[in-house]
Every structure is written in structure tokens, then in C-alpha cells.
Length: 375
Ligand SMILES: Cc1ncc(COP(=O)(O)O)c(C=O)c1O
Image (cartoon, rainbow, N blue to C red; front, side, top):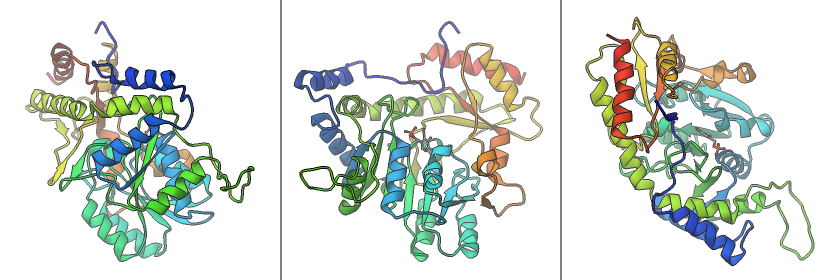
């Protein structure tokens, strides 16, 4: 390829919405963590997802940290967490010296297995919180997970960093739990270069998170602090990017779905390749299209990744499960199958390039390179 094809690079609107809102911030001199872009970005996002309150912050990780802080996660509390994810899902629990317990995936959605979650509750009846990930934009088995959390009276936080715009039974991911978080990191379906959002129907919870995100300043004239605060608020310039990007989110989902369908169609007759199906009752945003190579496939994931790399195309292995990460190995891991599903997916999975600016020719070229390996 002449130009490098990345996995999921930023894609600003052709209309220039982002630059217009950023320019507004300059023109009005609101170059700070207050202003119209922040207010409007929060308003539009909460309207889009159907949540009552939203707080724009510096990153998805900061949003998770604030959710945990607001729920009172502290030293030695147990936090149940999907094992197949990016480290940012659980890092904030470890910042608080809480104890993660990792939960295996199920095969249909690749997300937290409700059976493994039940098993975790048998061993640890009183976790402080459950954090559920909707991996690569595919919603988890939310009804089952939510029911289990409600039965045990434990709050659910949804890490919807990768699944903005995905729906489950017609409702947006990130709006089922006590808190939901989104990420606008550079590789996400919409990006602000870096940024995040915390949403909740609990107004007091979001107000508390806002207080903590702006250095926990007591409401008096001088600077008075009774609690430990953080500098986690989003800036008005960054929020301008977010406002603009939100206007093209539906278009990006459409383009990502087209990419998914192109891979599905282009690779359907290759026996060794399995492409993730859309689970029943869900409409994923298809942030990334991920395939698995069947056991015994003559091509290994790494060979596929290297063949694409040789043509200047980026692809990646599936997330390495958290319970296998050197830093988290000491924590417990709960599974129900002999061979952990998450380990199996890590060993056999490949994330394919899903750049929404790819041309049809580039898309066909990538499919051709993959097909050639299996001839
Ligand atoms: C599943 C998941 N959770 C959390 C994050 C953290 O988001 P951020 O990079 O905005 O801190 C990311 C992405 O980076 C992610 O993929």
C-alpha cells in the first residue's frame, strides 16, 4: 500500500465541524475547562445515548476512576472485571488499592460470561462493584449480567469505551448500569485526540464526580479542600472536537458496518476464518472487525498480521486477557470452561484494519492479501 493503513485512525468530518467549534473557543477566548463547547458536548452526548447526566473528562480512564471513587471503591474492596479488555478498565481500581477479580468471557459476545460472574459471587459474595466491557463495540449479555448484579445488590459500571453508539434491545450501551463511560481516545469511533465521558441517571453521582474532577474545591471563596481531588476535566477546545465528531457518529457507524460486511462477504468461503456474528438483539457499532482463525488453520494470527504489515497495513492481536498480564497475575480469575475462553480468543484472534477513510480498492486489496494466505 502506498499510504499506511492504520487499524482505526482519527477521521475528522469532511464538513469541518470540529474546526468550527474549536475556532469558536478561540474567538470567544474560552481556552479553559469551562465553556459552551463543554456544555454542548455533554448535552448532545447525553441526548444521543439517552442518559440523564453527562460529565466530560480528560480520558475514558479518568471517567472509570471517577465512577469508582463516587461508588466508594477503596483499599481491599473487590472489583469484578471482564478479563478480556484493555488495562484501563481495571487500572483505576488498582490506583485505589482495591483487589480485582477477573471474569472470563463467553463465546457469543466475547464479553463477561454471566455463568462465570455467578461463580465469582459464590466465592466473593460482596464485591464493591462490577465493571463490564462491551468489547470492540459488541454489547455484552447485559440483561443476564444486570440481573445478577441486582440480585446481589452490587452496582454495575459499563465500560463502553469501544461501544459508543452500539445498542442492546434498542438501548445504548453505557446506559444500563449505575455509570457508563465512553472514550474519545485517538483510535475510537469518534475522537477528541484524548477524552472521555461519564454518564449516569444519578444526578448527585455526576455532581460528585464533577467536584472530584475539578480538584475537590469546597464551595467557599478561598481554596478549601476536605477531600482528595483530581484534575480530570475536559478542556473547552477538546470539547469542540467532540461536538463536531458527534455530528458524524452515525455516519461512522454506517461506514464501520460497511467495512464489517465487506470482510464478512470477502472472507466467507475461507473455512479457517470465523468472523464474529452480531449477537441477537444487538446492533454493534463495529468499531473493529475481529476474526478468529480456527484451530489447525495453516495460517497463524501472527503470520496474518505479518503478511499485512509487509504491505504497510496495521492489524493487531486480540487484547491479552488481564489475568495473564504480569502485573495482574496475582489476582484471582474465574472461569467456567476448562480452557479459558478469553485465552482461546487471544490465541486465535486478529483485529483487522477498520479505517473509515479506506477506499473500496484499499478494502479489496486487504481482503485479497488475506485470501492469498489461504490458497
Ligand atoms: C475497553 C477500554 N476501556 C478503557 C479505555 C480507556 O480510555 P482512554 O484511553 O480514553 O483513557 C479504552 C481505550 O483506550 C478501552 O479500549
